[in-house]
Image (cartoon, rainbow, N blue to C red; front, side):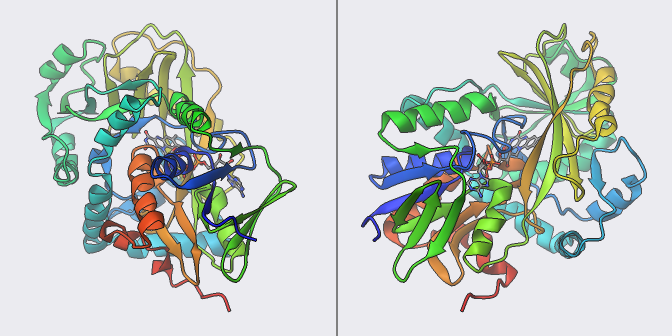
Length: 419
Ligand SMILES: Cc1cc2nc3c(=O)[nH]c(=O)nc-3n(C[C@H](O)[C@H](O)[C@H](O)COP(=O)(O)OP(=O)(O)OC[C@H]3O[C@@H](n4cnc5c(N)ncnc54)[C@H](O)[C@@H]3O)c2cc1C
């Protein structure tokens, strides 16, 4: 039997926790289920940037050509593995089809609209007692030349149209005034004054603590987790428990595809692997978060030390650590700083949930409206989490899909309807 109004959220990453938090605040009866501990996916393994200004989807025009060019470069920030499995090849072909200028512009506008107001929601969370480390005095985008900056400026300005403050162009000298740790390898910049970053672990821990205080059950480390359709509800199997739910929200990051498949819906979700390093006591301590555009590296000064993160790898073994590619993150960052970054510790890796058009999938699952999917946030899962939560809350509580979610309809992949 379904508990009349129970909503079960599967996944305790930034997206699942934000969805659960929004639903609980909206008065819904919610439970969270995760097969592992809170924040076990990419939740703690990311740069923690809250940057709607970086809304450009991964399948940008030319991205496949760039990745083919970089295929033979063991240290490049983007890699497509020479993997001939059907899923990987079909994914890359779909990504290629999505990388036309028109689809890219449409995707950027859709993600920009999804990210509108997300910075305010993070502030709202803090005001409401969700405790986490957040720094909101802007991020600095750094380039090796003014030409390189101008090359990126258009997409960034397009993203800024969706409620972010205008970008401030900076010369090399301005940059070093603002950020004295930078060397003259950094020759041009853009300051995005209203963007923010947070400590990813404190964000998921803060949300989990707040949810517990609100009385929301967090059923973590439950194996197996499975979903079954029933006539007018769904059942979520969580370890030995069977939860009869009015609705289930699948927000399990890269693990979401197997859960939707068990409901008869296949979504072309794959991982995009990234690497990071935590330098606990670096002699270099920038004042703000810095993006090294050419290297695609995010440098994040946290209370606990300096975090460097980057790279995007499609295909191959999700568990494997490519130490050479990871090491390139630190090696390519060094010239940008005056001081020494110190020795590089062992890297960590994280798996971004990716869909081939680079957009998330948020909405009812075709053929199974009791199940709502909220995943595929790619490089913006932290940034877009509270806004995703707010919109899923609206969908669950009103029964209507908000218009802003139209481009993110999970049905856009023409998933065969279950019989
Ligand atoms: C190197 C790197 C840097 C990044 N930097 C940023 C950044 O600066 N800003 C930003 O916004 N984003 C960033 N991201 C992306 C961000 O980390 C992800 O988009 C985000 O973590 C996705 O959140 P999620 O809640 O959907 O999934 P996850 O955080 O992956 O959480 C999924 C949860 O679901 C659980 N789960 C999985 N399968 C199952 C199952 N079958 N049953 C039950 N539970 C299951 C997992 O245990 C996990 O707890 C970065 C990612 C990487 C790798």
